[in-house]
Amino acid sequence: MKSKKTFNKSICCIGAGYIGGPTMAAIADHNHDRKVIVVDINKARIDAWNSDKMPIFEPGLDEVVKRRRGKNLFFSTDIDGAIKQCDIIFVGVNTPTKTFGRGAGCASDLQYWEATARNIVKVANRDKIVVEKSTLPVRTAEAMERILSNHPKFHFEVLSNPEFLAEGTAVKDLEAPDRVLIGGHQTPRGKAAIKALAEVYAAWVPKEKILTTNLWSAELSKLAANAMLAQRISSVNSLSALCEATEADIDQVAKAIGMDSRIGPKFLKTGPGFGGSCFKKDILNLVYICENYGLKEVADYWRQVVLINDYQQERMVAGIIKTMFNTLANKKLAVFGFAFKANTSDTRESPAIAITKLLAAERAQIVITDPEALGHVSGDLGELAANVETTEDPYEAAKGADAIILLTEWEQYKALDYKKLYKAMRKPAFLFDGRNILNHVELKSIGFEVKGIGKP
Ligand SMILES: NC(=O)c1ccc[n+]([C@@H]2O[C@H](COP(=O)([O-])OP(=O)(O)OC[C@H]3O[C@@H](n4cnc5c(N)ncnc54)[C@H](O)[C@@H]3O)[C@@H](O)[C@H]2O)c1
View 1 (cartoon, helix red, strand yellow):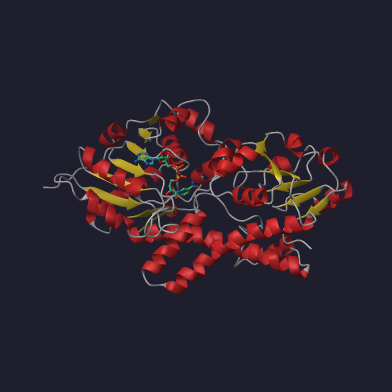
View 2 (tube, helix red, strand yellow; view 1 turned 45 degrees about the vertical axis):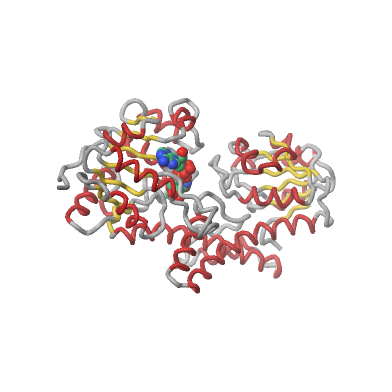
């Protein structure tokens, strides 16, 4: 017979990445009466969480972790021990795009998730609540339940609690989320589990912001939210191409449309395209799911968001080549910014990777500078990395360069001494502002040949 039990207060999270680490730190910070254990198979990552240098750069995260670590927040590689101790188990392992077999390039690779579910069944010592924190295809919980229901004695209630934080503002987003979404079965057991999880968040999130739904709505809402956000970026980027053809200015257009209260101003900034580990993989996953349900038109609609993103990067490089007299061979290009956006060290799916590769194919000499992300350059560029230089110092990067190509909107790039940079460069000195964050009038008066995106 399956046992009935009330749940203890300890919490663990399997997966100590960009999601597991910050989310659990926030929960520990607001629930001093709960023990929070974050576990991972990656020992180096756990060691970093236990050291002075966090494995990820995220403004404000150091303070929260240091405040609670060793008190009620613990990082460990003892996964089985944590599963045994805790009744609420978050699973925040990675769910990358599948690179092999059926659905390769589109579907989610759920092998890490499944391995985790099997391990929970293997080591569990009583009933547990298993919380999907990773972003998963809609109806994953169904498959997971089949694995989890394989236990003769204990019951595992699956909840979906997708995370909506954005890297770069993770601490702020966790502190004051727009909403916390908890999906579960609408059965007595499911409702009890939803209540137990809602109590964790209720320690600091106003009740009206804790939204409960059925399991499938919660799973799909996360994919849908990312698809809608990425769609706004692709929409504005598609219009940036039209601006360049018509002498309209995309920043002026974005401001004008964003002031419409039905549209709103956020996510209307043009740039080199979206990056990060989630948008592309989640949209492709949505596309794959739609195709599987025979919804070809819907799949095509969402796929276009990704295609426009690729197009924006190719278009940018084509513009650079054309402006620099149709050849980049042996020209020195200083790439300012490698992270996929400011305030993060994350470079997964960063537009800078695709753009650097396209520039390298033109046989340019590339120097990359970034305040936080240079550690990823060699991994991200593979063999190509041997021909690319890196430096944290932007002035060093620009020495003797023919062009500066700004790809990440780091605040410090606005405050650089552009007269000094101009002086150190080869002439004519080109500046491609891939984020439209610099003062182009001033730069032109210094002598730069300036190109923004979607600018006349
Ligand atoms: N990064 C974001 O901004 C973000 C936002 C919302 C949701 N998500 C979702 O959260 C999930 C995790 O994303 P992330 O960015 O934190 O990934 P990540 O790669 O930074 O972290 C995942 C961690 O899981 C660990 N792991 C993998 N298999 C394991 C196992 N069997 N046992 C223990 N640990 C294991 C890995 O070692 C890794 O440290 C993904 O599904 C992602 O889509 C991410």
